[in-house]
Image 1 (cartoon, chains in turn yellow, brown):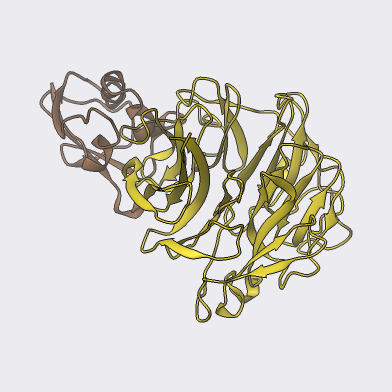
Image 2 (cartoon, each protein chain N blue to C red; image 1 turned 90 degrees about the horizontal axis):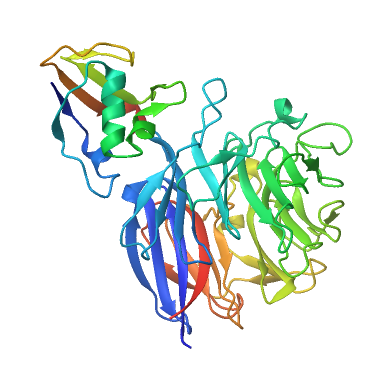
Length: 357
Length: 89
């Protein structure tokens, strides 16, 4: 059966969909959706539902939903609150649909879930009851819960990452949480590596082997072989430890992609104005620079944490969006790149989906 | 009855867009928000945050005077304008 490939793009002013056939050579753009709502994440669940999450300075945080491929939308934030005595939820940073559940990570950092496809939300209070919570510090992007990694077979087990509090794991459905930051540096905190406070930028778990995890951190790129209990720095070979997004090839868990950026004091952007994606095929033991088709010079792109995605076709397509409104894509595992869209609002998220046409 | 004026940016958030101008039988701001919620589910959360209280960047004017107290009375015949604050945009 023919397949359709989608790149779902969340922007500062609404959500867009790029569509192509399996060749991923020609792309069609549609949108904007969600009434120009500032959209931090835009995903398609396995049941076909589209969800977009974000926050509007006037009207607050909300999750949009479309059951008809984007033709009509509704939105709800019912329950998406810490209550009258808690801090104000400003925006939804991350949406992670699972089996009969959708999780939402918000700012200030916390986790919510919905079991009615986004109609209502329930606070997973155990995370903010962790004793470290009063000491969580925001990163430059705010105190955001930006990564939600579901265990592929155990619905009670998941990992989340907060910038800048670090990685946490629950094995009891969110009632209790354990820090998972061993040997992950936090250079902005003096002393030995702390138990928490790390600035994770993007956390990934391997669906086919959940003991394998990866993260792009403010202070390096790391892998774990034991479900996040311990981490190994795999930054050597990269031109910078700093970057925001990371993806894992769904067809080969040893293959990962990152986009190194100049460090914060040098602008958080493409190094020397020459954008490049870096790929490792051996879990970070070595890295290859991939920049064929990307701008060669004077291109100071910023690619934020949710802004890279990979599809599940045999030869994986890789996509990233920029704060300047461009979407770049590769249909050959990063070997060559082309620009799929330009002049969009500032891009905050890119997700890929493959659909039976 | 009071006359309520809703901003375009609010009504377009709902699939069956409410009219921009409507008549409501509400005697307080709180009753008005509840009545809007009953007709367009979700509107309460767009106008109010936990408390409940009116969102920081939503301005409500009753007969031209700014009002932030949800318990504020709405005299019969009054005009209620709900306007996004310039600070929010």
